[in-house]
Image (cartoon, rainbow, N blue to C red; front, side, top):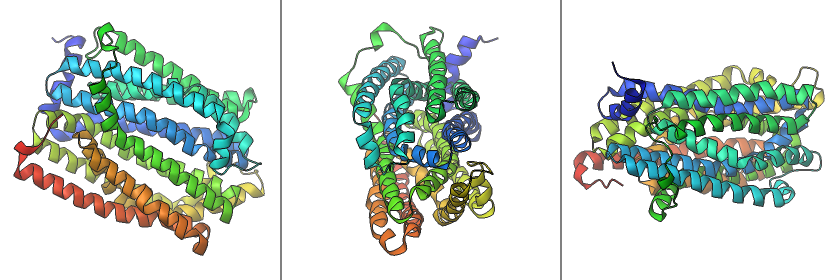
Length: 466
């Protein structure tokens, strides 16, 4: 009978032998639960803030999205970049290099998050005004972000180490860590908002405290010598080559988040000019509903990551391609479900975020959400095919293509549309810009993916592995 230690150390090796549907199920389901739980952070915050503080507080929370995305961008850069490298190194049988990547991930997370927190806190009001804050909403935004930025090192370290935990063969534990954080956040939100009367600041405290608890679990795991990858004194040395590889591969998700921040700024500015604070709040609600489905797709991609990375490192390209196809098909099913929600239950989804007796502002918010979500998601089923290729290129160590895809959708297509359409169509111009950009980006992603797979089939020996 194998000990738990033997099982844990053998887990990554099964990535090259077990049936692909079984592997994807094993890795994707915990990742989906974890990423969906992560999305529930924002949803829980919005629901309690909307019901406990008011609709304008939701608008204030929506204005923090660009800054939150920027903070998440750095966490994703380090977490996803290091996880991809660790999977490839394990596929090559080099556990020493995988542990060195873990140490560099910790050092990068700490340094980047501290610098971001300092800059954010010093220039917070200026940043929020740039993002579209008005006199009625900036107080809510400021109260929330002061706490979030103060705890940014915890957030980034938590996100990075959880990515590494999943990539090193412990997807269920990664899921459990995320679920524990969400459960604590859900419990603390009403306590801090309704009982202690801390308002928006209480929701932020609930988020940070829950992540502190989750990070403690992760640190204990990686401090345990029984873990497949664990902390050693020699790994905590910043190595230029490893750090450069982490940043290079992680640059694609970093730019996705960064471009998303730029897009949100343009959206908020256009909605403020053509609709006002309530429409900014409506976009915040729509974004949270959409992100719930996109986080499921993200979980599928995360489940695909160790499978693709390991088999690509082992030059098992047939398994790489099959894993990609299964993931893409599942992603389309998820985004199609999001499309159905936008058509069948838009008002019910909007009603979750406001109380029944919240007044005229609440009624306007629900109406704006209902109209906006119907306009934003008509092409949502195609988004599944658009997202998976970008992540696939990251996982096989070709970040330039992933960066190109993310930049094309956000900056080359969506931002110009957000400039051109609102002056002619008002708030509808903001909503219409998104499905147009999604459709164009999905076609481009399909073309690049077709060319990559054809090359892998025809000339596999020409593939360069990190």
